[in-house]
Length: 101
Length: 285
Image (cartoon, rainbow over all chains, first blue to last red; front, side, top):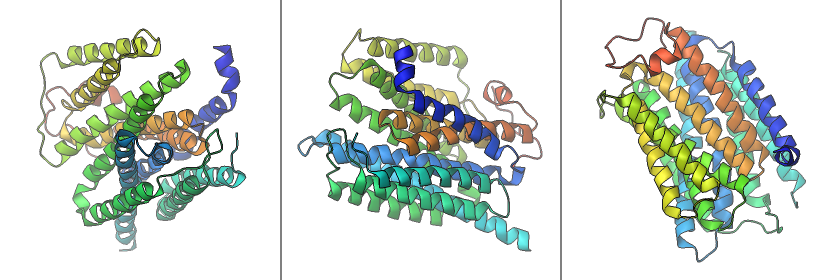
């Protein structure tokens, strides 16, 4: 347990600070922005695609199963990232127009 | 470790853009710009990973053809889907994309489990947890998506809570067996995957359609946590900060959304048996 703490000290610090930062950063969001913020956060957790790229890029040439699953993972991750940001942008575009009227 | 300093710098920039993005997304004037900034940081992190990432042996990535083919397909399909969707069906689109992220996390764990024959206990915990949370998020998001577009009706299963609790217990028990090294049988790992999927489905099934945005927000933070496990797996700071930020911000947002509907989260998750129509009060977004 202590050994785990010692070797992962930096990561654990990042986790703890990020938890508080996440809470702090959005705590005053007005209700109209709830859905766009959810959508934006949805796009951000698309960072998982970096993991998919690493697995895909390290798969051995002959390992068809890993190649196929990795390919699928990168496609799905890209959908999450690209779709997420574009949908959020469209929501906010509508929001901006409404406000100007 | 043979980590490229430019790669680390791009990850740092990526993390900062995510924090700024979330901050700006919570103010009406800056929201759209915040979304853009996060998108730029994400693109930077993705491309520096592709070209600069090196593993412990100092080897870079290969299979570039596969990677770029997947990126192009995902980008084209994702953009078209996001551009075409009706304004009224935005939440179901978010749910669908959230499910894709969960499935991505699940697949990463699957591949890692299959390719490492003798993983250390710590790595195994991360793989199993990432797989479970990703799967629950994926299955739950698919049900939420189906409910929002009317393909899946609200359904209450008698004794649903008890069944769910039993499935949850089974997931914990089997995971402990795999992580504790009591079984090296791959079938057990797939059984966990199956139970996690079932749990995700049954978890969302009885919740009323009007409460779906709250559930999607909750599943959204689940996927964030699943992404963070990927960060632990690859010792990758941008995955870790991005995932945890969404995990904590998403949880708070879920609670704020409940408050806006004058309800508590427990009320939405448990009290919605039978899912009475018009359950969502005014003020809901």
